[in-house]
Image 1 (spheres, rainbow, N blue to C red):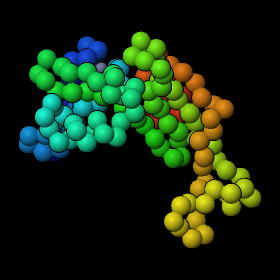
Image 2 (tube, rainbow, N blue to C red; image 1 turned 90 degrees about the vertical axis):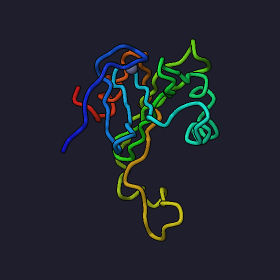
Image 3 (tube, helix red, strand yellow; image 1 turned 120 degrees about the horizontal axis):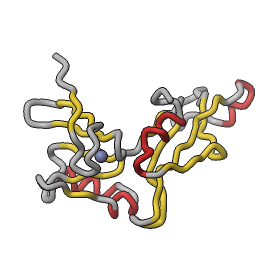
Image 4 (tube, rainbow, N blue to C red; image 1 turned 180 degrees about the vertical axis):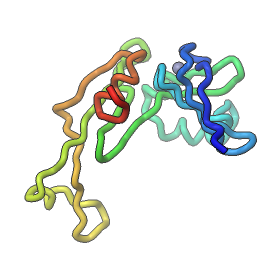
Length: 153
Ligand SMILES: [Zn+2]
């Protein structure tokens, strides 16, 4: 049974909030309108929130959003080794954008320069090419995903 569905995002109001049912009581939320994500357990006083707060970058913590049901939302991070990455980037909540970076294929003869940590004779085939970095407004999150080829443009 496919229980995935789209809902209205409590943060940005778009109807592009993708809900994935983990089990009867827990859903994951990923809004393609504003790029923020959440989980049913993400609430003040919950361990999962403390865990997030201890690892997230300052900007992500500053952008923390609590919806009217007390559920906490953070900006998402997309990191796909063969495609690229999209992450919130900036100096403050009033001055940030989505940054998108494309992954490029490493020529065979250069791969020896990109060993996989802890793995003998294994090398990366792609690397993030920081020269491709492009910035997108918050509401243009989907364009950022399209830019790295994750969504059709
Ligand atoms: Zn949203």
